[in-house]
Image 1: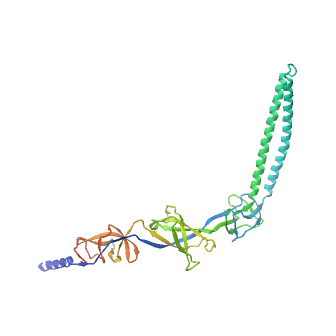
Image 2 (image 1 turned 180 degrees about the vertical axis):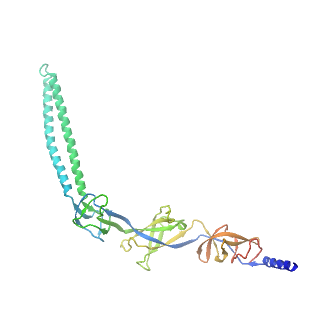
Image 3 (image 1 turned 135 degrees about the vertical axis):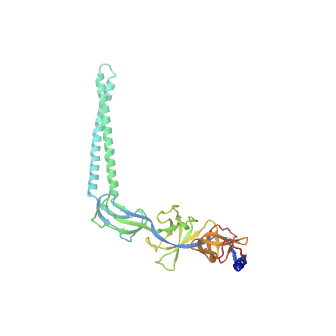
Length: 358
């Protein structure tokens, strides 16, 4: 029994006399970058459909054609539409002849009423009922003339509407770009509605959108207008840059990432939509990080911790290991700047044991 107690005392003395190399916890603003995949999209993209039913007469462009805003891309013919417009124009002419007749009747009725009114100034010359009847005829002729005018206005509006529809027979480019898809040829019947075949696809590729899905852990510190570097497999060894232009401030619930858009100048169309560049994404944290040597972090099956030395006694402080920053590593937990920790920690340094710091 005495021998066992002596061994215990000696072991305790050894533990109390154990020397431990220590370091201070460092607080530092960490700036680093991570490699993220991205995808190029056209800055503007539109699929062009026929707004009216008709036959394709000509297609002035093809896949790869560079076009300017307002340039004609295709033309259609619609015989029924031309027939409807001609019918509306004929109806206008007919209405105008009716208006001439109505104006003549109005003028005659007005003249008759004025003569009777003038004659009625002499008592007994014109019966009062005749004067009333003449005035009623004037009102009726005036109403008929107004009705004809309204019919003419409606007929003219119909002509304008048909002419507007005929304007859609000329398909024009809504913006500068390049034709990336052509689906029709002369003679094809096209038109609006469900199942309609698109005529062409137009994309603006002189300026691109680079969409980067930024993981949740890297979204802090994103700033609009910041320049970001990227590379493309099609141009090995060459570096490109883009500007952060649109930040949605919303996470994708499926991927837990934020789709941030960059604007990319592409005047020579070297880069193309559909490419997948590698983006060097800058990671900026709003607050300084706590850094410790990698050997100070102990990971067991139960916990991850560092050994803090306070007043010569050992404390285990639970932490979460972060990213490697040079020769140090980020940690998150109940530490603060200036805490003294073991440089090379292990679970052999039991909590509550006494140590001598080196």
